[in-house]
Image 1: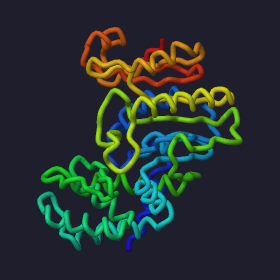
Image 2 (image 1 turned 45 degrees about the vertical axis):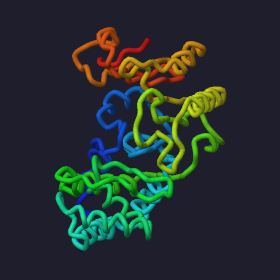
Image 3 (image 1 turned 90 degrees about the horizontal axis):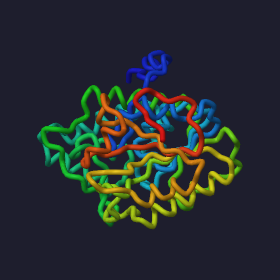
Image 4 (image 1 turned 90 degrees about the vertical axis):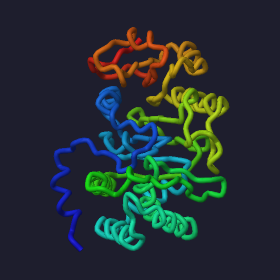
Length: 313
């Protein structure tokens, strides 16, 4: 097998943005140019309580990165990416594609691999399934069986996805990263220092998706979870530790009243409005559109600098 790791290591020295090979719903890849400048400049331990596709943490400059998610099979896949030789990972993926004759149109082959994965739960087989599934989604039923349908004429393991995967894995191997599979309520943040930083990108209360409806064998997201997370962030703030919370305060005419009141009741919390869909407009233009989704980053510290397309109030 060709030594891909040696080829890519030199290429990654320029530290360009690493893109996750997972097209994760709610992923922050497009928002990174706005998010990262709002993070503290000196980060010792970066803790991501809802890592998802890892788009944020993999691009953060920190001494150590902690990725956590309650989706067990996702974390198991990341651990394999980190431990297994890169060449072996790529070889396994391409072997499975050939073995099951996966393509843009072979739905039968996809279903056979899906059945095999649900029996064996090989983490790398999960990645192959994601590559060929509808919208590249990660979806399980209440029996923890992967059940996302086939992505006919839309999804495959193409060269761009392969390149993203290789760069992603290389960064995993070159960085000091630790993975955990814990519900955010049970995650213990101990021995924290002033340069430790907690980032949260939870399911959004006022939006809906297969990842937070509570019908997929994993914990859903309701007002209870929303309040528990905000309580945990208050506890982090009491420890004099910095945090940042990604969320939306308005979405298709809905408002997250719980979130807004929480910020109003804490004078040291700041709402940084992210200009996601309206790059040539300002915040006041955005909120006049009732169908706009107002993305924010809430911090308990003064961001080091404000990019031109971010508005803090």
